[in-house]
Length: 170
Image (tube, rainbow, N blue to C red; front, side, top):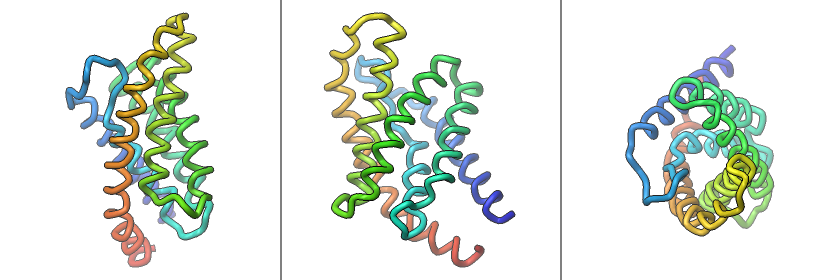
């Protein structure tokens, strides 16, 4: 029961971050650049416990539900499609990178940000039926590195508080 409450709280927090992100006009003339604020919750869940597997099921559940719910609340079906594609690539890479002992949370978050954009560009190629969107990829990769690093650093700062509260209330 406590785990359900905690995951519900983290899902609500991810939805709030999605909403806040939708209010921030963050664009450099390239469609698809976002801060990725809700991905902070995913990274925190992956690192919540000390095992190499982390909270994989919890992170996957919260991430998937967040994308679907925020798509219906703040976006459209294309937002859900792009979000799920980016999340699938991002999550798979972060899961593999999490198992690598040489990468910190920042490195894992950076890879997640980059591959989220790669997944979305792949979907865009099929949706708009042209490879021209691939030209956006270098800019999106730079944005993924920057936002992934910021979220990774923020995650490293917040993780001790999440673990402390889990021990205290869990």
